[in-house]
Length: 213
Image (cartoon, rainbow, N blue to C red; front, top):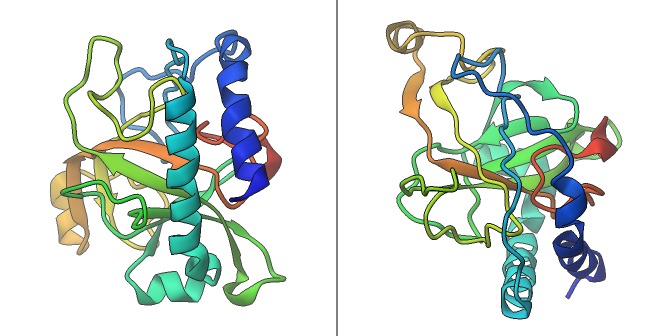
């Protein structure tokens, strides 16, 4: 079991109080210029030992299953396509789908890469992202998520055009998206980032990674 992931997840529980003092990302209900809009509700509950242990186990399974995607060419061969710009603190989203029927920790629908000329394909795998179909609870987070709310910050996007090479996934209407051969998603499921390939000093499930800035 990776010591770095274990330390990151266990440390996150103790960072909740400090993170609560950080201002959340704004969200005015308008389409974002990029995929950068990631509202960050502050976790409100403490994680139990069982939750921490189970989360570490899940992330280890995710690492083992996605190790092959360290070569971005393998990801592309399996249908992952870049969506949106290369964003400081996040990198580039490679999306396989935004419409998932069930959660599978070993098959993340989105991979995050950072430009790196030193690795095959020119991109280094830094994180994975999961989607979750659920109603919104009274705390503004999804009901019964697969990762504890005390650890994971979930968010979701609306009016997304899935079209490879499109700089602004939120910039087209449904008709415009389809006319250009894209696939329009009115509301994507809940999303969470998991920084399992590049340590995130802000927390393994925090939307942005300051180490990428």
